[in-house]
Length: 316
Image (cartoon, rainbow, N blue to C red; front, side):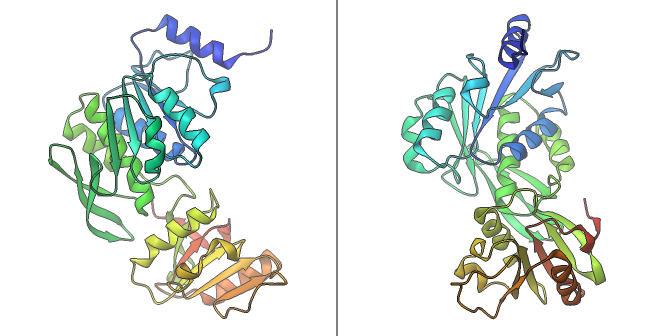
């Protein structure tokens, strides 16, 4: 008989009805959400990601990729991290409507899609009001963020986040909100937050050659991720800010104005207009040689493709 992961999950839940369940859905951002949930909730509970037959946990987090390989059950909590299409919204919110409670990303779920959400137990999270939980920023540097996580009762939880990029702060805010839902105390939530660092390649700061700073964002490359990375480094003081990518189209004109230059691995398209800030390189060696010559103390390089030879060590 072929292995059936769906049936495995169904049997586990039948045998362990007291185990709490969280399902993380979304077009993007699921891994960061799962990591933040696991670290914070893991301060007071035994948490697994998916079913582990050797462990009977207090809580299981499921990464929802498709309804085709997922059991039909009523989760305690559903997280909706993002939506790109109406079809995704209908699928994610269809599951969320069966849950005990729903947490929705106010920034990355278009307002038009919320019409598919019928569950009354909804908590939103994001960068600012009107989200129920939001992060109030006080300071931002290469060491991360300082600020408060603010809850619906307007209570402030002062935190220091070893995270770069507002899009990476949202999963931490969400996990703090879910922890509060499960009854965790503020001290335990803070312990968890203090342990959270970026996933490698997701805005991971590193020491670069000759005193430069490399922000490794190469794990998931898209025009949106480049834009969000540029938004983050825009707030930082630096003598030069360079983006290394494999497509000049991933850097919009408005973002280009904020940068010193863009280095692109690949041939210049025949119809691409000349742009003094954009330089093309046919191979990695020539790109490496060029970037190596541009590095100096304080320079920030946003790395949107793997280029490990310019990294000396990661900060966190």
